[in-house]
Amino acid sequence: MTVARVPVNICNSQDETCGCQSGVWTASVIILSIGSWVGKVGPRPADDEVAHLISPRERLETVRQVLSEVPLIDGHNDLPWNIRNFVHNQLAEFNFNTDLRQVAPWSKSAWSQTDLVRLREGMVGGQFWAAYVPCDSQHLNAVQLTLEQVDLIKRLIEKYSQNMQFAASSREILEAHGNGKIASLIGVEGGHSLGSSLAVLRTLYQLGVRYLTLTHTCNTPWAKSSSVEDKDEDEGGLTAFGKAVVQEMNRLGMLIDLSHTARATMRDALRTSKAPLIFSHSSAFAICNSSRNVPDDILKQLAANGGLVMVTFYNYFVKCGSQATISDVAEHIYYIRKLIGVDHIGVGGDFDGINKTPRGLEDVSKYPELFAELLRSGEWNVLDLKKVAGLNLLRVLRQVERVRDDMRTAGATPSEEYLQNSPDTIGKCALDINSVQRVMEV
Ligand SMILES: [Zn+2]
View 1 (tube, rainbow, N blue to C red):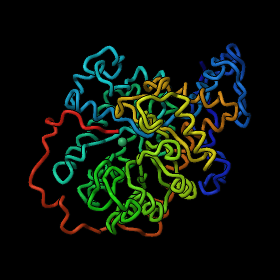
View 2: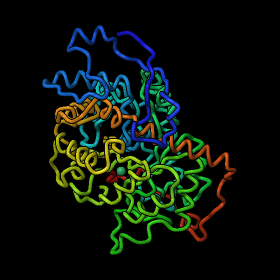
View 3: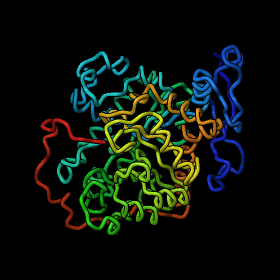
View 4: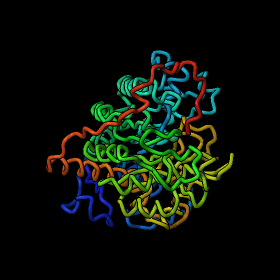
């Protein structure tokens, strides 16, 4: 293997707004030498060439080449919550650099699909690690527990710095990938983690958090969740304070994640945000009508907004049942591509937050198999693969960063909106987190 510096175009041809008209973005990446490549199966197809590859081996080799050039960025992994559950955040008792299928209690859990051995095998180049705390802690100690999860993720990255590198920008993702490390980003899953406070939101940003999922499975005082029974799901998504949260996220440069939110919240956020939004781990409602998936009309608005849906792998969201296959996941990707185009698709496996995985996509080592499955259709070129792997997420993050910079230039100042009489300010108890055996988090 040789190391070369090559230009990487992180723009999509259809994207006029991503600011890359000035040309090609350059970055350092490591690529396999053409010489060693030719010796195996010949040069990979050109970026714009439809890849008619017959053999599974050719398809996998092409995918591996693509993922060495462009970071595969996954939108959501719940390992940090499992570290809380299994070893109470004691990293001394956790060896990430081993095959956890051989180590109890991980080996006995249906919820464990992640370790460094398999992340490397899966060629994962970027990962949003979820700083998740359960809705049970809302109005209690959610903020403290969230800070502890952010601290855990940072300590994990530090301890395994030979393989992981903290990233908080589009540029830092590419730098980490160029260094051969997993760009490690932090996403907070659930608006309850804010304690209804924009000061907490800003502080989380300063700690490096780069997305907030507006709700988890509970309503917050300012946003409606898809998990709460509601006759009128299409009304009352975000309150005035909820819209202030979205606007402050625009000002900070934080991605707004709509997975888990009610349709009304999705619509209100899409109307309010100046920057593209994401679904970090959701699939297509038209194929599986779970409220965790995205309806067609929202997908169309998402595309108009320049955003991204990161297709998720949980069997119950892929096939609305306990059984699914890697081809079923590909069907969601094909469907979304047909509806809104390849520029708005990514992947968000939700590994370590799910206990039923598709056949062929059992853990983080299997991402190349999914991309090889897309090639099998004979309708995908290499550039399409690159977009779904990471270019789309990089484009969205750069656009979010541009909105932040523009607002700064225009003189936007920190919002001083606050929520009067919020339950977050009158609570008197704390959740004993160690008493929580297992809170379903998918
Ligand atoms: Zn989730």
